[in-house]
Length: 202
Image 1 (cartoon, rainbow, N blue to C red):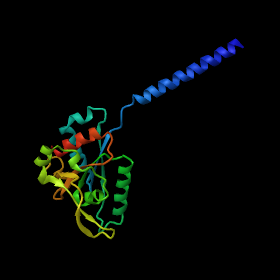
Image 2: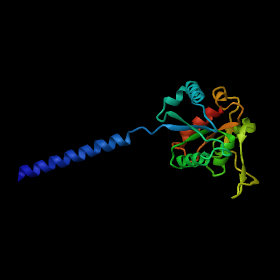
Image 3: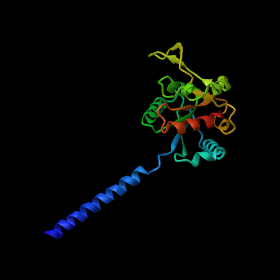
Image 4: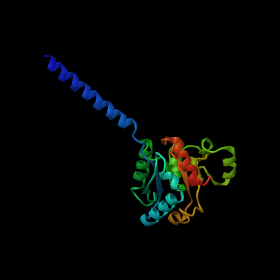
């Protein structure tokens, strides 16, 4: 009987020890990477790879922290001619809600659709007064629409910074207006804000 009790005690102790090791390994696991989506009507794969490689090379600190930066791309299509464009927009919104996207680099026409649904963080909560003043002419805001898609004359808060003239990204977007945007529920927010500032050049 004593031997059985001893065996049970050893087994229980072993089980508890294994659980504690497992929990410790989970708690020490590094957070996942920060996800930057590069989106537009059409994203050419070669230009995308070239631009994201150039961005990463220009900011080596992005890979040094606990949440390295990862890039993904999506071509939204032209909503006027592409029947799948609406589905792409809905997919991105769902990804943002699920915290699968932390930042977006996007053409302004598509960014407007996301901004109108409050997907992005207002830049006033990210930038200091000095920083806001320095990039006042680059702040991006978008006119709101009603339920039927008609412009209302009201505007969203400034929620992005224009990037036209960016050496790493102009190759990808050409003559389109585009900018960088911080997703409202990015995690970890502090790290995502720093990446936003790095990309914006603020």
